[in-house]
Image (cartoon, rainbow, N blue to C red):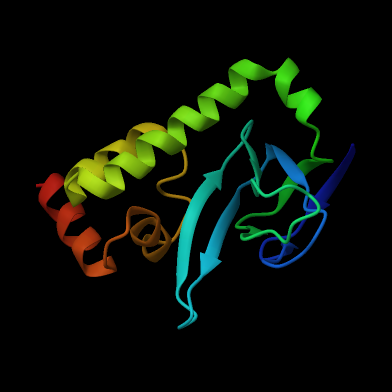
Length: 154
């Protein structure tokens, strides 16, 4: 485990790399995302302060996600360690429940419901990321997000 500082825009992990790491954010903001065959970003997760982010693939299998810094960040870099995760099962279960809820919402919730859930899950970062990234995370067009925000702030 080592503590590092990364600059905004710095890429910590690229899709296809082996031996990917786990990152715990002390301060700043990270995100994970994939790129489709057309080069479009699909944001999987944001990681603000006190969140942990990583790719779920075993370290001997190529990872699927890119991870980069959206702000200058102070982070802990950890090796993937299933025994450590087992000791911290509460945090692991919380991450799984957040991701499960997100998948279910992407399959069945309206765009407004997804936005409201985003506000509840990430209340401190909604103003820290560009609107197009929020739209990508929600699986909607930026124009749809603008319309939702306009309607909610009337």
